[in-house]
Image 1 (cartoon, helix red, strand yellow):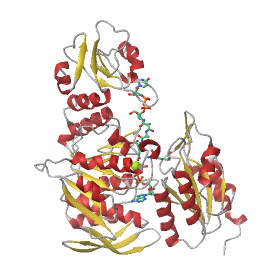
Image 2 (spheres, rainbow, N blue to C red; image 1 turned 180 degrees about the vertical axis):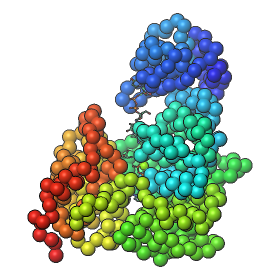
Image 3 (tube, helix red, strand yellow; image 1 turned 90 degrees about the horizontal axis):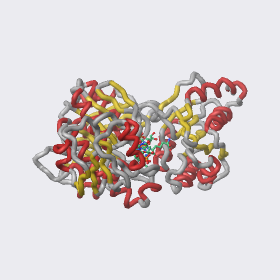
Image 4 (cartoon, rainbow, N blue to C red; image 1 turned 60 degrees about the vertical axis):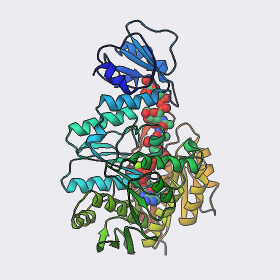
Length: 496
Ligand SMILES: CC(=O)N[C@H]1[C@@H](OP(=O)(O)OP(=O)(O)OC[C@H]2O[C@@H](n3ccc(=O)[nH]c3=O)[C@H](O)[C@@H]2O)O[C@H](CO)[C@@H](O)[C@@H]1O[C@H](C)C(=O)N[C@@H](C)C(=O)N[C@H](CCC(=O)O)C(=O)O
Ligand SMILES: Nc1ncnc2c1ncn2[C@@H]1O[C@H](COP(=O)(O)OP(=O)(O)OP(=O)(O)O)[C@@H](O)[C@H]1O
Ligand SMILES: N[C@H](CCC[C@H](N)C(=O)O)C(=O)O
Ligand SMILES: [Mg+2]
């Protein structure tokens, strides 16, 4: 692309040297740089991209975008000084990849919990119906069935625009994207033209990053601001009528509003909900009729998730009977309330709950069909929102019969510190602390009796533990099966 054209929308303070006629690519990571490309220096939380200018030039970068003017400048290299390199990266990426989001119908899903579940189900139903789709979120990036690793729930602005361009080239028409609060405030979604914004819920998480719930609420609201005020584009915000915060989000957009809920009045409302061991039934009330529905999901929270899915699919114009037909047969994504078939009479559930709200709701759901004891394994990540730890410990002890507090990606934080903070919230002494997660799982299986439920919370689909700087392979299913073999039930006396 012509360099002058590429920079036409960027607020440039000064250009040192001359723009080369054209550039071949853009990067924010020096390790990926290829010849004749643009390298944008981003000041990160860990390092400053300006430190990698030499390395980017060695790899052939011909334009360097800086926020701080370097002491030494090489001849033959063009330096572009801007006020904010992160913002510039958003403009450059959109321009370079030719505004791919405007060629796609994009659904953005935000909220503290439920984003992966909702996005995955929307994507699966659209595919079953024959749409060519793209999915991006916590578990993976999936372009019409081809899967790629996803480093973040919402990718950095360059990965985002490159991914959307790849989706356009693959013939994708509809995209479902998880939108994290970090993604919204860190400019990762700059320029993304959403057709739908979905709000699941807002409860405590990520206060290490956002500081207060008010800032966290505002961050998620930015998705609805992204939907914009241009009424020539047909856009809809899909909000949870039972979450107070929806009122604030409605004021942030002029898009059409579609609401769903269970308690309050809503366009799509679930009534007469019946919970079963491996499915949930309810009556869906709409302005155009009532429908009975069975979904292969457990828990009231999943009724909310599926209601939001219905709103999106309906807004896309999918025939209603077909939506309902597909939903009967579309399972949850991996590691979300997954009943792990071990062949043993101890029941094991693998779930991704890592907030107070999710743990409480998951335990309530299990309690609804479980007549024996619930043993929960609860952990949190190192360095993250420390304030949520005692709250997670409290709700877990309140709603389980026994808890084992452990680690879940401790990073550089000592495991003991993490488990002690979880235990600080315990309401009784029915718990123990085992920082080593493998030992914690083994212990839970060892003490569980026939019919008991072992809930392994926090990691869901993750097949690793982040310890220090290491990514240690960690397979909860393998560990569980080993524990079942090492501690067979016959040695246990069944609970009465
Ligand atoms: C706090 C945070 O968001 N950090 C993100 C940030 O990392 P960072 O600021 O540490 O980056 P850095 O390592 O300092 O690097 C700065 C710059 O130097 C460049 N660099 C670095 C090294 C090098 O050799 N050469 C080089 O050019 C980097 O490419 C980068 O441009 O930029 C990285 C690249 O975009 C992100 O992957 C990283 O996410 C980390 C992994 C992370 O854990 N983020 C979490 C907090 C997060 O964003 N979570 C949300 C989910 C929340 C939810 O689910 O609700 C998410 O969307 O994932
Ligand atoms: N609507 C909901 N309300 C409360 N808890 C939920 C809801 N949906 C799912 N959960 C719980 O939260 C966990 C995470 O769900 P999911 O992965 O769908 O959310 P997410 O928003 O994508 O999370 P993350 O931000 O960590 O990627 C689930 O395993 C379940 O325990
Ligand atoms: N999206 C969540 C993932 C948490 C997953 C859990 N396994 C942990 O590491 O705490 C976050 O960024 O906090
Ligand atoms: Mg997710």
